[in-house]
Length: 367
Picture (cartoon, rainbow, N blue to C red):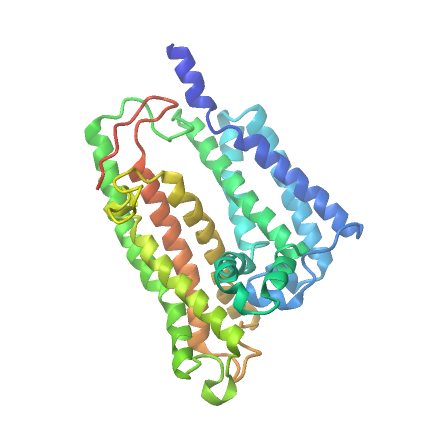
């Protein structure tokens, strides 16, 4: 039984290795197809540089070459993790896996992912009020650029998980929950308390950052347009106003939902939720969407860092030109995304109960 438990402990999560390997092989094949002009290229829209599409600032050949190199590196790294995840080679491959995940987020991923996430509920709720919006949305989502963007988001997750699992194997921890053997209840409670403290700080930063964007959209209702040339230089039509208010409302709704990462109602459903009141909130229900949103926010927020280096600002072509307040609102998304990622990780650590793989851990405390 002990041998079987040890095998389960070291085997859980290793599905990520072949999955990440397949993702990288797929990227390499895509790069070759782009170079041969067999498939439409996702790096040709120069305007996407303004939302963090770094590779779009160069000739499409550069984008193909970068993704081919990244795919080759990932294929080699994935092969090592699949065949020999232990030892020096495994440790180097695990660190490389995390670096690959970071490179995916910082280079090919861009702010259109946040647009996809933000516009989806707007289209569902208000699509009927804006003629042509649903069909335009479908066309937008299925473009080569955005399909590849979703593929990159998948790759960032797969390589991130692969790196974590690989490092857990190096220290002989459970590849599912990350715990080493012999943890006492006292140690577990200390870890959870530290995670709660860290989560509270991260959520405070994330909430403050999330309110910056609504602060430049809500004034539209009163005839003021910060960062868009002032009252006389810009006036949104009905569709633009609805979308702007929808995105601002989404940001404010996100601020409320983030509080659940450190509040009791983020662990147990609150009383007013009929049929669910008092039941345990599934960890994945909070962690999965929060992780995806954090990736999207960082992908868009990094555009300001790129703009400082290239001079290509998001509002450069808007009435009145570059506006520091407007750019700061988009830059705040980088802080928001990073803080949300930390808060999500802290929430996951705090919510870990007994591990079904290794048997370590204790029932979670509902606080």
